[in-house]
Amino acid sequence: MAQTKEECLVFLNEARDALDELSLLEEQEKQLSQEETRLEECLEAEKKLMEDTIQKTIKTRREEIRATYEKEMDKAQSQLKKMRSKREKAKNEGIKGRILEETRPFMEEIRELKMQMKGLIRQNHVPGYCQSALYYGLYFPRHLKEYMMLILYVLIFFLMIPWGVYLLIPERKPLYLTVVYFVDILVVGGGYLAIGNRTKMLYMETLREGRKYQDQIWENKKKIKKTTSAIRRDRNESLYNLEKFDDEIARLQQELSDVASKQKDALNAFETVTKNILTDEIEHNHKEKLDHLQEKYQQVSAELRSVMQQMKEKRMHVTGCYGTYLGQEFMDAQKIVQLSELVREGRASNVSEAISVYKAQGQKNQGAR
Image (cartoon, rainbow, N blue to C red; front, side):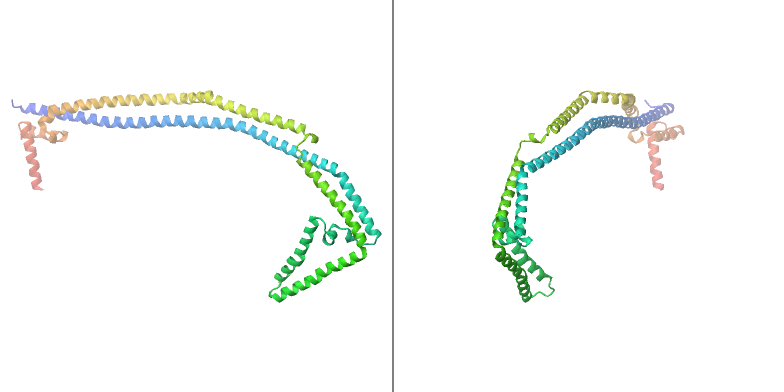
């Protein structure tokens, strides 16, 4: 049955209104979708802020607890180090005193032997240097140390000094080295022989007697060294009155152990109790804002779902009622207005004629261009 002009206009107006409603729903869907995204981002940001605050607060409080006890442990460690140092110092003083006491007879005997040797040298008018250990090491060596002294003397005066003098000469020649060694042997060697011949030829008996004194001095020095070594190796510390230091060290070690145990207990209490309390407090502080954002998010999401459902139904309605008749090309509010104008002006009596006229007019306009 053919449509009248009025029915055609009513149809086109209803189609236009339906498309306008669909367009409004699409715009509303777009706005709601953007608002949903914004609220979701705000909600996630607030949750992250809360989690970061929890982690930062827990970490800070944990470090504060650890630092407090570590400060006390550092003080105890410092006191313990000082006390051990004092104990070691007292022990060393005790060892020195013990060495001095146990080696006193040998030291006194050495002093007595040196006095006797000095008297012997003076009594026989022997040069004073003949009583020195250096003289007996160079001219009457008997002990290993004295032989080492003689070897060192030879190395210094017959090797190092001549070679050093030669290196100082700007122009080095083998002849100069020969001259240096010749002068060195003449001066040093000659002096050595001259002193030895003069003293040995005139005071041999006295020097031999002095050698006996030197040997006794060497024996006493060996005893002193042996006694000193034995005392230093002795692990018995009861002779040095270190009990007060040991008591204080034990007290500080116990204090250090107690502080470490308290730190462990405090950290354990923090992890099992305090951390949960802090977490609850921070979550409570953020709860109102989170709940508000969550409520708004759920509200917008619900509105968005409702609008999307309305869009779906409206789109199906528009397609079923108007799209099948107008076609996809004329599912546009502006084009429908133009079709209504063609019907209203009498240039078309129905929708199909209006579409045909519209298309023909469009082709004509294209040809004119």
